[in-house]
Structures are given as structure tokens and as C-alpha cells.
Length: 310
Ligand code: CP
Image (cartoon, rainbow, N blue to C red):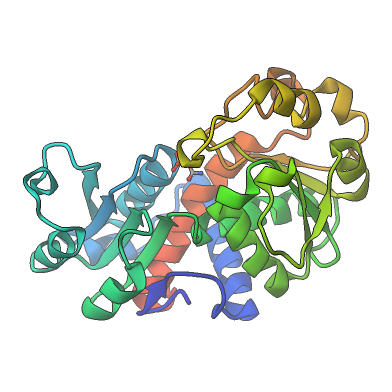
């Protein structure tokens, strides 16, 4: 949960905390637009946030970096192993413990499952925010998606996510984003269904699945397309067949409700899981997700540090 103990997953977060977080993110966004100065910047001046990205990232790293800077925290960024003592054989755990000795206020960590993030979090005196942990979860991504979706619904005079239906299309078996949406859907009352070739679906799941994209698009009120994570597959993936059956393109879009938002957590491989025609579709929310991510993550950092008092 987003308090002094940080955020490793979404199982233990309370619904009221999520609502609070969304309200907080919206307030930060509004205040920034209105150039209102808030006093937390003075509180954190001279203090640091440790952003330890042991796996590649663009959106999550930059948005947490922006969020930390807007809180007044100086972001200390480790990005990959190059140029660090990981190259000399130092372990992830020892790296983190050494950085703790330098006194950051919060740890924001992206890693593979090779690092036991939960175990290291118990050894640290400061909170840990999971910024993507192997295939296990990406809680801040699911939260920002839901925040972005909520705002989209509000602009269409529809109140919240209760009863909404999210179709997640693509490489779900390797998706930490899909894993976190399963956790979040239980809290916020939206339903999740999966769509993709059998090899991409989780081996065991109690989630509704669609084997054809047109059927899934006809069912949902929002669609989220995922990248094919070639780097996590042990065998070669026949992409031509995948594109033919599951690419979201103009032919398939006719099955999607005219008001249903289109999400993608990124990075996007245009021409594979999604066609670039989506860029001009009014339902495309991809860059709104990125923008929402900064506010949601700033709210998350502040709430983690001090319960959210502005
Ligand atoms: N959505 C997401 O996690 O993107 P990055 O890998 O670029 O951070």
C-alpha cells in the first residue's frame, strides 16, 4: 500500500487509498497548470530519491524522475549495469544496501524476478515502490492506466470504472501490466478479459478469454494492447500470423465501441501489435497514459512519504 512501507503490489491497497491517490494526482495536475506553488518542495529540498532501474525503461524511469523532481527531491538514477559496480560482480542487493547508506528518502526499483524485491524491501529503512518487477507486476502502471481511464470516463460524463470491461490483447503470459490489472480490477470493479493466441495466454487463469479479436472487441468497453515481448520468449514467434489475427488495425476497429478508449502501456511496436492508423483515432489514449503517469507517480511518492498531506 502507498504509505511508509511503499508499494510492491496492489493486493493490499485499500479502495479508499486508490480514490485518494486519484484525487491527489488530479489536484497536483490542476495546481501545476494554475502555477500554484505547494510547500512540499521546500520540505524535500536537498533530499534524494533513488531510482534503481536494473532493467530497461523509458516511460517509467522518466516519469518517476519528473515526479520526484516536481516533489523537490533530487532523483539519483541508476540505469542498467553499464558504468556501475554491477559490472564488477557486485550483487543487486549489495548495490541497494550501499545506496541506502547514502540516505535516500525512497527507493523506486525496476528489476527482473532475479531480485527478490519484497525481501530487499524488508531490509531497507525507507519505502520501496515497484517500478516493474519481471513478469510479477507493475502496480504504478496499472494505477496510472486506471487514473487515465477514469478521467476519460469523467470527460464523457460517466462516473467511474465500476462495471467497465477491459480487454487486454497480446502477450499476456509475459505481461506484468496484465498481472497488476488483474489485482486492480478486483478493487475498482472493472472486469478484465484476455485475447491472444494460446501460447500468449496464462497457463492457468480464471479470467474470461477470447480467441478472436473481433469477439473480444465486441465485448469490451476499453481495449489495452500489449507489446509482443520477444526477449522473454524461449522459441521464435511467427509474427506474420500474430499480426494477421491479433493486430489492432482499421479492419478490427470497426468492432470496437465508438467511445471505447484504446490503451497501450508502451513501448509500442507500430506495425506489429497495433497499426499506426491508431495514432489519428480519437479513442487513442497512449500519450494521455504517459502524461497521467507523471501526476499519478508524483501523488504516489508524496503519499508514500507522508500520507499525502499537501
Ligand atoms: N510502460 C512501461 O513500463 O514502459 P517503460 O518500459 O518504457 O518504462
